[in-house]
Amino acid sequence: RNMLDIAKQTNEMKVFIILVGLLFAVSIIYVVLAPFTKVEESFNVQATHDILALGLDIGKYDHLQFPGVVPRTFLGPVVLALFALPLQFLRAADGSRFPLLLITRSELAIFTVTSITKLLSSFRSVFSSTDACFAALCFLSQFHLLFYSSRPLPNVFALVLTNLANASRISSPESSISTFILCVAAAVFRCEIGILIVTTLVTDSIVFPKTLPKRLVLGFLGGVLGALASFQIDSSFWQRPCYPELEVFLFNVVLNRSKEWGVSPPHWYFTSAIPRALLGSLPLTLYGLALDRRLARIVYPNLVFVAIYSYLPHKELRFIFYALPMLNLCAGVGLSSLFKSRSKSKLRYSAFLCGCGLLLASVLLTMFALQASRLNYPGGHALRTMHELEATAERANVLGRDKAHRFVHIDAHAAMTGVSRFLENPATWTYSKEEDHTALNWTDFSHLVTARPHVGGFKRIHVEHGYSKSSLRELSFTTEPKVFVHVREDLL
Image 1 (cartoon, rainbow, N blue to C red):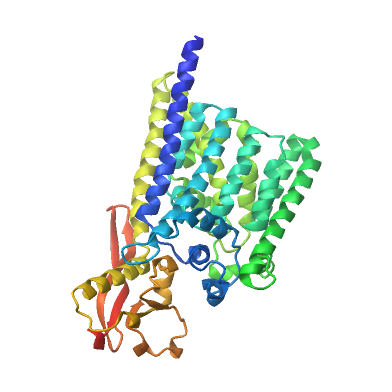
Image 2: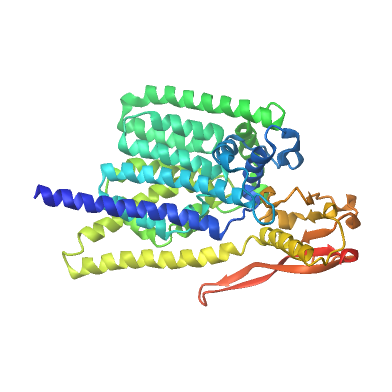
């Protein structure tokens, strides 16, 4: 019997390792299939590029010309750039640093999935291998977490730390290290994690009251260290005394100006965001949470965090990323229970098949969402196509002008839908993203990448289509012209 148990454990470990490998593989596949980034990721993308390309020449950094509404920390970009430093010589065929965009995003995907793996491993050690394997299947069946795992958003950097903190809460429930990690995440990347710290502290103090003093001390230490590190590094990069998360807190919470980017009803996270993120795992999550009392301590703080955070008018799914992995653990328990009891009756076997069917439906919806998302970056595709067209024309000796006069203007729409400095070739091109068009003399530019289909004195040479709408019923997408590439007529 001992031999059978060992063989069973070995097989379960093999399955777990395969599923973890798939998590890494899928996250990297998303990087390759949707390599460009949008406006929400702009700061961290440009900052990572500038650290790699410009080093200590901070005066030329993108954030000083386009600072955004509130400053963001450089700590995340610094980490990504340091790991990519040995490969900074890589270039694409068009001379751009596009390969480095793929590399730095892949790094973040690896960090994120590693934290998910740590969470699953801790979960496996306390619950069971079967529970952890089915939880991994839930992660794989969903779109948002793995798709965003490589996207350099402050929320994703914070997600890495919250996953590690939750892993510690599961495997070492009386340890205070989770509080330390959460406080670092809140101080450096996302101040709203402070709500999660409070809900976690209250829950853990009720279950383990003797650990409260140590948790408070370590939490204070983590917050101070994180804030000091952020202030020191970010003041250097922003070239003024700067603690980004304090300014973000004042802007979003004290001034409540985040609502300028849209308002959603209080129930939106629970009735729209979480169901879209979990897809078919949602009923399994509810079933698992009702089934196993042990889940309450590790999941309820995250649910209360979402409930409290719902009072902030502006809402986005990425703001509650930290809760989604914990809900997947519940779904794993639910589906694992159906699996273990499948042989007891036809009804239970049918219930297990329904659970598998829910995950299969999630996979199909994920594939659909991926195809739609790939169409959301027309600006990035248009800029790369412009470089390719120019290279082709140069080889054919069609354009009668010198390389030094390649001067392209990129308008706001293109810049927000995929364009980043990683796509630029500064050796032979000059780029402008000046937003005040009244101050521009269009004849200074050789090329335009713009949302305008017609520009006087220029000829359109490329039309980039992008996502317009989709139909789940027909499983189809509709695209429309989004970004246009123009070249000045006298250069043709």
